[in-house]
Image (cartoon, rainbow, N blue to C red):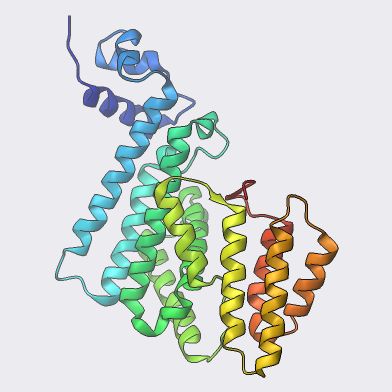
Length: 304
């Protein structure tokens, strides 16, 4: 009887999943390709979901290994390195779209291991984007770095969709050049406009990224606590009298206490947020906190 290794099964599964996707591939087809019985596959993987999760993990590990190799190429500097990273991202994800992209509505998302792996990939991509943009634009981008990462990710996602669907007959390099050019404009505006408005405070961004890297869901309560902490930090540096700052700090404390209740009063919370939002320097954080409290984002769970 033919003896086959776990890695050979994964290699065969990766080929089939890459070519046709999760739903179109059966365990029997992979077994036939490996010239073994279905039962032999189940000795290594209890389900098709577990096998796909293993393929997904190896695929993303290969991608990040290629990124590391690209970073070591000494002839690539500055904008060209930035450009090459974007091109690598597009080409690799397009080549592996059935594994890395097209699973949004699939039952595989309910698999615990796959869910954790997806979050870890998201965290690693966030860290990669952060480091790449910081390297490209230097220390002056510091306070605006999280916001630039968010905008960069959104542009990448939309352009990827256009490339995969063949809309506009765009080339990978032309699209990457377009993105670098627009990121230069965005980064320049952020660094030179003097604006203090931040969509995403660095502490919240770091907490989200680190939580994704750990493979655990980021709790709604954790985000609320961090935002209130950031509001308190901003209050301490407001250009106002000490008594006014003290009043605002007390109000922030009352807000935190109200939100910590099993069932809080929406009217009371709205009143506290409205008062704090009268301070121009607090408006961005207050708006974000209000969004989290009353319409939590999809990556936040229901745990406090």
